[in-house]
Length: 371
Image (cartoon, rainbow, N blue to C red; front, top):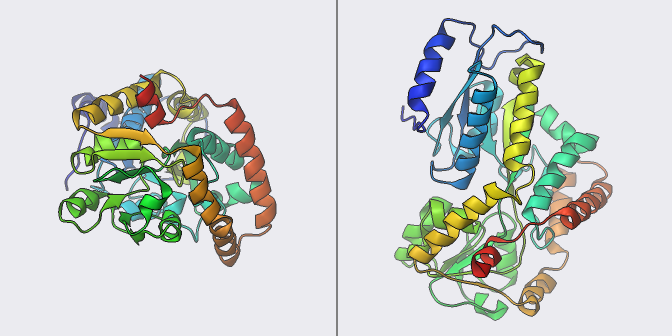
């Protein structure tokens, strides 16, 4: 099996040798406590590449947990779907093939109908506020939390996919420029692109580069600037990237098997919670700036011309979409068995408004242009 390891591999091997002589718990149930003699050897499956900024966050989270637990917890990461495929993160976590996984509610709309509210673009313009809202809803909204409980998983943290970027081979600085373009998209952005007159294509992000090179598509959407630049090198084939102000369209969540979580002593649970807060809790500080600086530098190396649509152009697309995508989500959520969807949406908007007002988030394109 191909198991990509981080630069911590040698240290993990040493710690793992000690852990092997102790009690190793992977995917089994137990009760919380402070049994200092227990060790916990866990696995984390990710569909992201080792270079991606989600992986950077994952590595930092793992580093914090391992250091703060003095080796009582070791976590082996598996990148690029080498343990479980992209769409299998939830299943792998539930059946014990992995203890922790990166996934997204967007991958599992039937299981997470309310959480799929994040897939509606043109609503959340601040993805950091959106992820704070998601965690607040998990902690305070019974209907929202029950979706995760029913699947036997616990969110460790929600991670933002920064605002959807449009990458093109030629300049596209207006709403009208979408008309007739063949554009890669995902989730509800596919319908938004169709409304704009584009020809949407639901290809995997890993296929964008080759599809642009071969003329299969003209442009791509539905990915953040960081992933596009640092993970997939899309600036090499699409030298124009613009923030269309269509907002956040998805988020990522790190989930842990709930039985495994319950088996951890309370002090380890606290350390993991604190690690989540340190890595993703604010995102307006040094950590996100480091990611953005790397992205800006690499965008310049790839010769990318960055821009942002004017408010007038952005409003044209938002007005064309109207309530179509919100109503689609509501209908799908109700069909999946969610109740009081309208009331939940009001709660979501209220939480989002509060989180947005408190946020100092600067979108990555704006960040790069202002440096």
